[in-house]
Length: 350
Image (cartoon, rainbow, N blue to C red; front, side, top):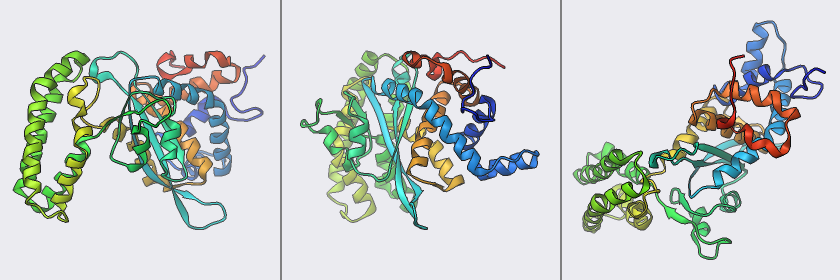
């Protein structure tokens, strides 16, 4: 018998479907533009039809996305961040603001051979209950920004115990850097210089085992952090709390313990850049297709950003990967879905 089609009774094969998915979520081509491109090639595929295809593919790939989620959460450190996305509200002309959340597992900086992965989730708002739900099975280090919605995750009352909060030096540095660019403040410049010394150490130890990273940080980073804290407290006393530099310094000092945690743990990172990098694809998409058509559209976007983003982290061609799993999923046993995670798949050049 002929192999099952990804979409039952559908005309599209896995190659065409993978092209449409990659076009939108990897190359950021809105479906109406893809429809126009196909029309110029003599193929009439309406935007509505393409949208139905995307929907059907996401339903088919949901078990793989669920397996990706379990993998990302089954680790000792996760990076998280979120970004606003415009979403059309049913029956209203005005778009509302939803959120795309990212969760990254990536321990290559400690020499780990475990494949890096990223999982995304959509929510219709930015309430803290959403990351609480996403992170329910997770135990360990959470690298994040200072969003108050995460606060309950770091509480001892959290079911399963408090997560360990690790803040982001890149975030803290950016606030000071913005002040320096606009004012050329000597104090801001000195702060940037001191932070760059911390980063120079991180560059040296990238890829080393946890124990070696920790030893270097204990010996060298902690001294610099203590000196930086004393200097910032002194300078902050002379700054107006309403000045931009005063606000930037207060932000750093208010986050101090979470910013310094990495110096006592070789697994932790000095910043949350892994999550910020993961969100770039979403931000590029926002520039091109402006909004999701519905909450459901946000959910399917999150699924595809995760599978495509994980392919990219592992140096795998997203289109070839999607083509493969769409071709095998209709007949694939549900108890072997982990075998379809990107790093487990052997792709041919067909």
